[in-house]
Amino acid sequence: MKKRVKTNLEYFVFLIPSLILFVFCVIYPFLSGIHLAFTDWNGIAPTYNYVGLDNFIQLFSDKQVLEPLKNTLIYGFGVTIANNIIALTLASVLSKKFRGQAFFKTIFFIPLSISVVLASFVWRYIFANLLNGITGQSLLGAKSTVLVGIIIISLWNNLGSNTMIYIAGLAGIPKDYEEAAMIDGAGLLQRFRYITIPMLMPSFSICITLTLTSSLREFGLVLAATGGGPAGSSETFALLIYNYMFKYSRAGYAQAVSLVFMVVLVAIGLLLNRYFRNREVEA
Amino acid sequence: MKQNKLGIAGRLYLLIAGIFFLFPFLICLLMAVKSRQDRGGVLSLPDRIHWENFANAIEEANIISSLKNSIIITLACVVIIVFVSATAAYAIGRQYHKRFYRIYEAILIASMMIPFQAVMIPVYKMYRSLDLLNTRTGAVIMISGMAVAYCTIMIIGFVRRIPIELEEAAMIEGAGRFRICFTIVMPLLKPILATVATLQFLSVWNEFNVSILLLQSEEIKTIPMQQYVFFGAYGADYNTAFAAAVITMIPVIIFFLILQRYVVAGMTAGAVKG
Image (cartoon, rainbow over all chains, first blue to last red; front, top):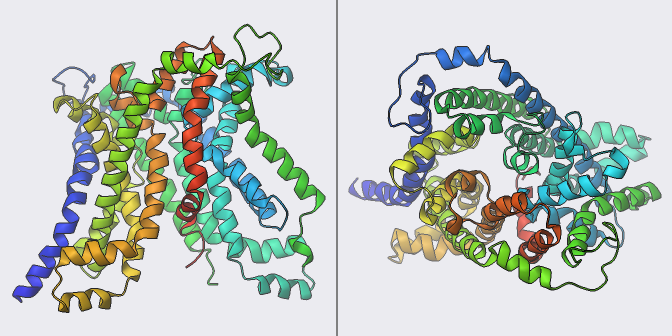
């Protein structure tokens, strides 16, 4: 009995660094932040008043959050759809045998090592000085096209990771499945529909869930590329929260917005997860 | 095998995608070596290679100071993240039958869904009252803390795959728990730890969310922070800015190329049913 207690204690010691760091950086800020959502704190003053549910009531009648909401959804779903379609098609091309395969893979992966600041800087220049011949003015300069511009930067910066995952997923499909289907006379599309897609479900699950939840919370790329402009037409929810805190000194309200934002993101993540879990097949 | 050959459409697709991915790098290189007075248009070749752009960039963009900050912060974070995640994963992996450890694992997983914005304001408030704003220590703690959940989860499965008999044998030989962990378990975890370290090196090196919140004074800015300001302010002097971009891109690209297999291993973990 004494020995068991000792063993348990020994294992617990290994957990202590993690507990301290995690509580300090995530648990405590998260829990201590909840009550701020019920205050009128301006982010600077040492004191604040409790205002009950005012912030939440205001949020649901605030016309100012509609535009960022729309932008976040367009950007999030735009990136997710485009990224996954291109990554999957690229992966299936890269899975074939040809000379220069390793070279092309590397080309697609390298932008993953570039920061959002650098990526936006280079693309801002390209949009303004090179592609403006085709698009009239910089994609980032017009309200109607700015989100398309940011989506393109995001694709350049992040496509590599999903491409990697799909390549690994495709490599994991046993060759005899395809061969058997071919012998049975299944065409390319049929094979894709009835073999590739079901067998790739674990990859879809990771790629789609991760791309959607991370792009819905996009912050750095938007801030570096446009700062939310022109005239707020690319302001996302994450940026809105940041602006409420640091620009408009409404920290209490910002915290309320961020909690609602979090609940929505968690719900989307869980729904997607359940959707894909139910569709995974046993290999 | 007919379907394994790359057709003409596939080649064309690769070519277009290849241009899209490579093009920005070519622009960077080209712009970085042109003079400011160059009127030849974006794609024209420079009259000669203007190395002075690089010298200007190093000076004006504060590259030396921000490089120092980036190196210190990144190395410190990677060491802390790997150590903390590996030890926690060891405890959780070996006590997986205990409810307490399972709950902690569930909390770690759940925390990955919290957007940084939900803790941003309280973190800022806490850091101001602890006087940790604008300090390297503060940034290292927070960046590491935000990463441990993901890394711990990555490692747990690998711990569980190491046969417990190895540890029991060492136990009989009289080795203590710490010696077992650091001389038997950790060496066996080397591949996954290398993967975690590589991925975290890249992600901390490019870190933006935490840095913009906590690192605002000039002398402790990391490279992305420095460039966020520099690219905003020096918009007109593109050649110096591009030279700065190239200087900071090269080391991280070389790092990436050397350790590419670890990046691929890390990102594809879980993509195929194991």
